[in-house]
Amino acid sequence: MRLWLLFLACGLVTYATRASFIAAGDRIRLPEAVERALRYVGPAAFAAIAIPLVLGGDGLSEFSADVPRIIASLAAGLVILRWRSIPYSLVVGMCSLWLLDWIGL
Image 1: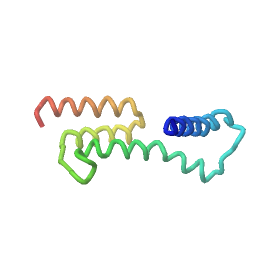
Image 2: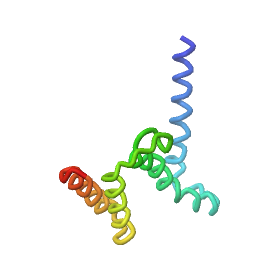
Image 3: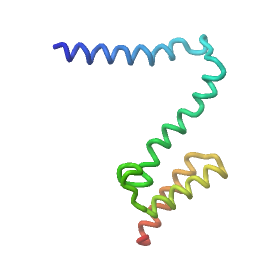
Image 4: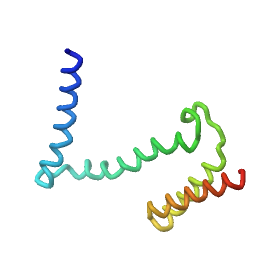
């Protein structure tokens, strides 16, 4: 029973912290340094998820040279640098990966 109460308490605390930002909205201004730092949270989280998938294995501990994934991610990165479009980069990256897989690389 105590374990379920702990789960419930953790859920309520998590919900309250997330809902507080929604409820407060624009009424509370964060310091400029915090707002600048928060701009990098999305790209950092994406990199933390994507890099182990691209390099294969368990992150860098079991690096496997998965050449098609590396080439496809470089192609998607070039699209991001040129056009700054996430949908275009996803299409180019996936099509590159499928093409490289299809030709047997």
